[in-house]
Image (cartoon, rainbow, N blue to C red; front, side, top):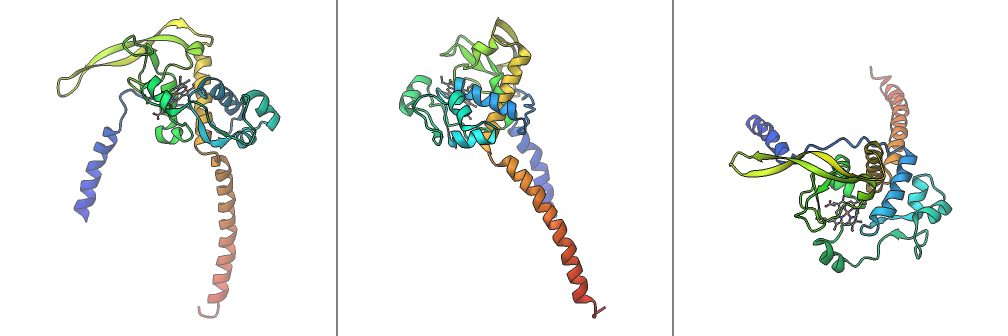
Length: 245
Ligand code: HEC
């Protein structure tokens, strides 16, 4: 048994190294309690992402309530013609067409914050750079050869990747993006774009687990309840054992 445990411990670092991404990820630094950030994220999402991506497990009215918007505000700002307030946030793009346009159909993003992690998402939104060899002229540092165009290029601008050639242990050469150089500035400054990427990541983190905030609040009540229950359970135990000791 001891040997087995030691063997497992030695195997652990290997596992975590195998999962390490090529480019270091930036910390997303999101705050799920920040409702104005969630509202900005939702706005960016419906304007720039929902042309291609659905969040099919999310309903407009539920989302509105969770991020602090009334049904009317959601209707006026986040919905397009044809949707009703109780509808799920689906899209009309046929999967087969999408697959032929982009190589891969745009996946539903309901739970992408959990499959990829929030730091990955934030870095992905900041990782697009010019690469003429790609169909849309863009590549991504954290998702090499991605099939998605840079949906936020008007906001961020276009940047060139500064690459470095790396040679791995087997002598294979590959190039790795180590930094960026802005070629055509966008509507937002670098700081504003970071915030936009953070807001979008925050929104996707919220859709990945809409009950997270409630769950944490509930957890506090459960602990308080257990604390009070402990006092009574202890008193009861004393009562039961009183005549025995
Ligand atoms: C023009 C269509 C289009 C738009 C607009 C678009 N995407 Fe995509 N997106 C795609 C496609 C296609 C893929 C699949 C890429 C692949 O697998 O190579 C993708 C993949 C992704 C992924 C990776 C999912 C995964 O786990 O593999 C994320 C995250 C993502 N998009 C987020 C966004 C966000 C956020 C926006 C809005 C800012 C956005 N996308 C706008 C087409 C689009």
